[in-house]
Image (cartoon, rainbow, N blue to C red; front, side, top):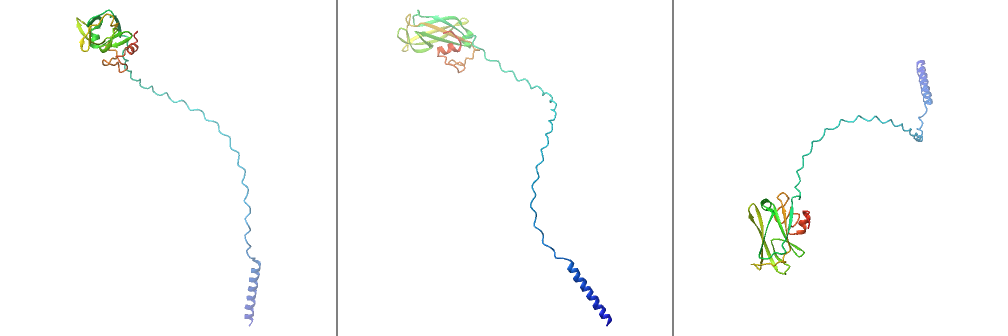
Length: 212
């Protein structure tokens, strides 16, 4: 009986201790609200730029380039082109012959000989056809060179309607020869390097800087 009472007393003590312990531990409180976001701090001052570094040393000079190829020699100028005038106003007949120191074998055979005939104020390259003379006759003039020793002679022949024609004194005025050596850039009988028309007397005179 006493033992039972002791156990009962010990149980009551333990129960009292449990209630006391629970009374001391309070319930967990609710989390508080988050505080406001703080203000950004002021940017720091930029640092001072550093001094420029010293210039580097100049590099070594490059090697000289290879010399260019020499250009080709230019063509010979017009210094050797010559001309000569002949008064034929008093000539008459069916032909005309002219021997002159201009008509060398080299000039005739290797160069170019141009012949121009003036009637009144018109110049015609010959040979030519349907030339109006001062006597108002329409004539054709043919030309050719014939050898005489080591040089040549210029021959003119006059015709009309296919027949030999005799001109009268005063029908023609002046004959002019232009000698162009073989080294003066003449190509063919009708052009000089394709630049001018050899039938144009004034163009030829200007091109070769000859007095008209």
